[in-house]
Length: 113
Image (cartoon, rainbow, N blue to C red; front, side):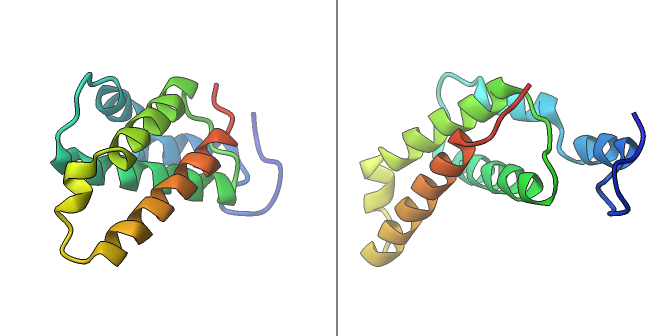
């Protein structure tokens, strides 16, 4: 408990507060859904990206089940050909898939509790 540096994120108080900004109960509910609707794809994508960025700032502890669930759901999105075919621009869809695969790779490198 305490501080380990002078940065904004280098103390327990700050990191505890950040975890209130990113509600893990909501994340768990999202990733534990058996089936997600296409409108929830954006929630999955933004959750993954936020977690990745928080880990760049400082190792942000999140439940390993959340990380694993995000990976699982990102793979559902990647494999949803019908949804991808709905994009007007095929190049945009390809760029999106590339981004999502990057998120999966980065999430696989994160360590949760």
